[in-house]
Length: 224
Length: 354
Image 1 (cartoon, each protein chain N blue to C red):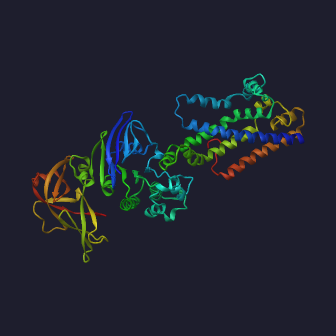
Image 2 (tube, each protein chain N blue to C red):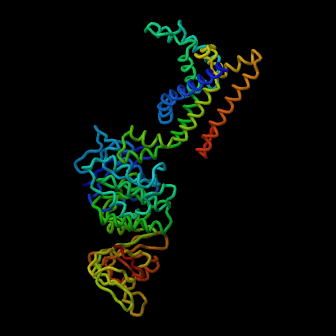
Image 3 (spheres, one colour):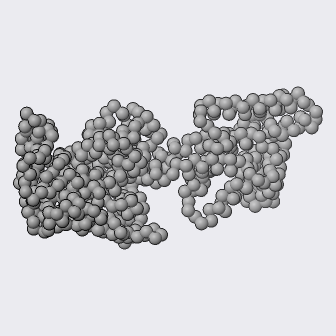
């Protein structure tokens, strides 16, 4: 039971940290996707959408190779006196961020695109410079997109399994998240434990969505 | 300050060479048919789009071959065709948006003045979603004024309003024109609007600026489409000369004649403009003695222009002023109208603009 609680705490930590990083990285990327006229933008769009179609194990495998001691990222970190990221919490965060990227970037890009040019032009004629326009007009008008992106990014990280299994393994307190702990319980026929965790995750996810829909009556998860 | 624009606008097949000046006072109408490029010109002046050319306000260069001042650094006030209020801000915050970004030293129009001029006192705590079309339009005009612009750019500010709201919004614009010394560039394709509000007209058509000049001249030039269009009309400058209590009439002296119009609450000597539709003017060779028409003016035919198959537009000279009459070609032949012929013009309906 104590191990299960640890797994739950770890999962929530992973989801919070990953979502925060995703929002910070995803916002400028989504803005660029929504406003750029670059000819080869579609290449970036395809790259961002890749985790949607790729089996998580494929993504996890490449990340494991890259982040491990022999991989480019892992060896660089070791050379700088750090530690490689395979089978670590940090490795899990990197994996989650890559895997959930489209779930955050796409709603944000849609929301930015829907604002259109007009409010930003109005702001420009009212003496607001480019950065000012972004923070005082684009961000507040894209609020529904931010709610969707946060919920999707968070929920998607809560439920991920394949990527975590590949790069995180199953180390209690370090990389053992709820989905993996459930799998562990079922493998060992500990159905009661599995019920507790599965039910907990179900309730948590449901409450999360209830909260969002209640606060935001016109909220749409799939077509924000 | 005078605004100078010399822009070369090219977009696909569309070409417009816009070379004109906007006088440093009063309302200048930028008039032309839909698709003439009026909005493109306005956007280029505001710095929202970049086309090759020069834009200067007084001594300040906003754009030339070397430089391009971005929109947020140009001293313009811009009112877009749709009101385009920020939906996430209430009316007050919308009004303060530009003001907050303006250095104290550059504030010349106070927010309370803008609120008062556009009658927004009761709307300040509302959200844009709770405003009617006319109210939203007035808020967007006040918002543009609050940045103390050196020139106010209005892009068809009456689009989408019903007749009553149009007339109401026009009166507010009229009071702005009188109260503030800010030149206004007013884009419109509606004859009636520019005739009512503009002092000066810039006529766009066929890819160029066809002509510019004072509104009363531009309205009555037979070589321009305004005088031969369906809404042709003339403006006469005049002064209130008195009132007739018994018949509830007001007298206005204009073009050396005394006009009688339905009573208006105006003091003697007030300068006014008389607006007379060409369709409401009929011509006789002798002064009609038994007629219901009060305003009969001796005039001289200056020129005629065919207007469609059945009608002609007659340009009449009355002292210093010009009056248009729209009559049938048959009547023109029956009266043997030609340049220099003396006639009597009867104006059936005369509107007073203050």
